[in-house]
Image (cartoon, rainbow, N blue to C red; front, side, top):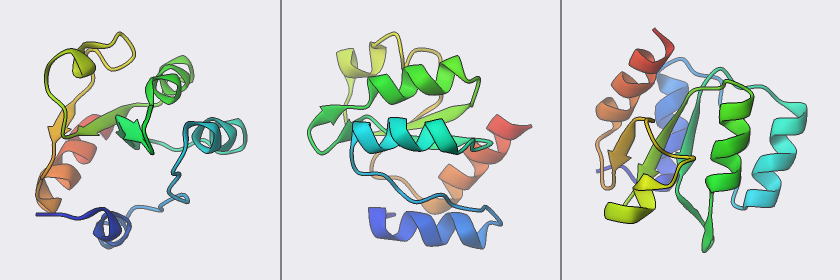
Length: 105
């Protein structure tokens, strides 16, 4: 299983340049004003807030993203998350790397 602290290291080992992880919707939206990632991983819940506004901003900018979540059901059906790859927590590192590579292909 992969824990959140290992995510950055895992992605760097796979050859990715990792932007600063964000812990709030406000910070995530601010980062998208100055940075443009090729792809993103997005937890559905950032400190108790739905990350749907970030998902909407990523869609608007045509930045592909993968949703990481422990939720099931209605939360993953929000329009901002619909049709995006979802990886259920807990997950293994190679599963995430493979999904990101597929998304960029």
